[in-house]
Every structure is written in structure tokens, then in C-alpha cells.
Length: 305
Image (cartoon, rainbow, N blue to C red; front, side, top):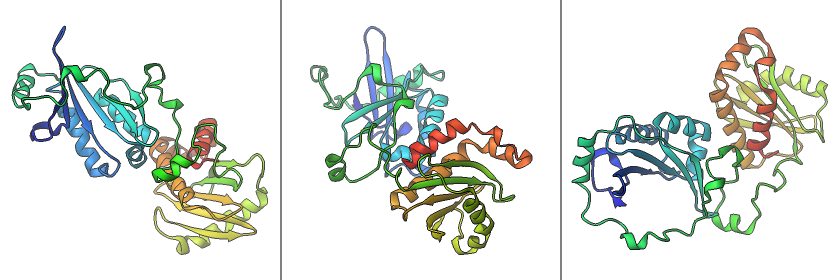
């Protein structure tokens, strides 16, 4: 394992070599959440693609906050196209999450690989004798590469996370105050998706009345992704406006900042991954174009309801 941060070519962070029984090479890219801006991510995708010329395998390693910035489904899709191994390192719980198994490069160039190897430092990061145990982080092969079994959790300061139970089995954080979520076509005002609490269903006439009055709030709320709390007949409604849809979240109490952030995250995910269905709905007004069960599960997970 070699530290390649001083080599300008290809922009790798690490380069791995295994010589027996056959020469195996890996190019590794490591990014933190702070580094993972949209511009940096696009640059990283380009570098991973280029690195496939000098390594049989490419590997992308990042953190939960990076996943939150870019979106898990987008990351998986991009890494699949790049044929790269994809890992998320959870530093709080000291876990390594294997997300996607990569495949051998189709662009591997032996001459370019040999030229790059000549530029490596004289000494590797670790000698062979120190490779027996290199990490205290938890990783189990049989549990890895199953991203559907992973769940979202709050990106909170480490001191708070270590004193609270953030396991998958914990009761959804905002279940008690959630009443209903509407995904609405801003052009026609028709509801695309309606998901309500089974324990505290909202009266349909109340929702209908709110929808009729909602357009009058637009100038007050404004912006494409901004929100403002609205008090309406004993409920608190948070509205969020995207490029294709608008959301109305009905609550019994004012929303915590983390719930507001979750709502924006859902809005972005919905518009990104259901754009074809949204366009089909705008043409036909047919709600059956949406897989309600799948979207309902997504709402529950992202909003923690």
C-alpha cells in the first residue's frame, strides 16, 4: 500500500500492489463529507474513470456525511458505471459498510501502469509483517454489499451519538408529531402522493381547505428549496418548493431543524429519482405511475416517521 498523494498524475490517494500469484493493482480514492461538494464529486468521478487505466481495480471510500451530500442511489449508480468498489466508513460506530463490489477494469493499460509504478515512493505505508491486523473497525463479509439493509441516522456530534441509542430498531424520531405529507404538482395543484399517519389521520376536508389556500402562501414562502412554517387550524405545515413538485408536511408541533433538513433531502431525492414518473403524471394525472409502497417506505425512512 503506497501513499500517492504527492504524485500529481491521476490524483490517487493510495495505490495497492499484490504481486503473487499474479500482479494485482488497486487505485483508491478517499473523500470526506466536507470535501464532497458537487464540483469535487464530479472531479472525483472523472479521476476514478482515468485511474482504471493504471489499475485493475478502483476503490472509492467515503463517509455518511458525504452520502448525505450526494445521495446514496446516485453514488451507487455512478460507482456501478465506473466498476469501482464502494465503501462507506462510519467513524462514529467504527464500522465499514461495503456498498458495491467492483469489477475489473476494461481500460487497463499495462504500459501506463508500469510507468505509474515507477513513480511510487520507495517504501510502502506498511510493511508486509504489519498487515495481519490493520484496523479495529468492524467489517463482516457476509453482512456487506447489501445497501438495502442500511438505514439513515442523524449526523450529530460524536458526544451525542455515543450517549444515545441510534440502532435500526429505535422508534422513528418524528412519528408522534407527524400527521401527513403531500407531494403536489405545482402547475395543476393536484396531489401526486399522499402519505398520512395511521395513528393520527388528518381530516380530508382540512387538507382540501389547506390546498385551496396554499397558493396564497407562495409569495410569503418563496424560493425553490426554502421553507416556512405555517399555522393552519391547529396544525403546523412546512412547505417546500422544488423544480418539479411542492411538498406540504403536516405536523402537530413545530418541526425540529433536522426534520426540515430531512424534508429537503426527500424533496431532492424524489425529484431526482422519479423525474420520469413526475413528467408522466403531469401529462396524464394518473397516480398509478408511482409505486406508492416504495415511496411510502422512502418517506418513512428519510423523515423518520
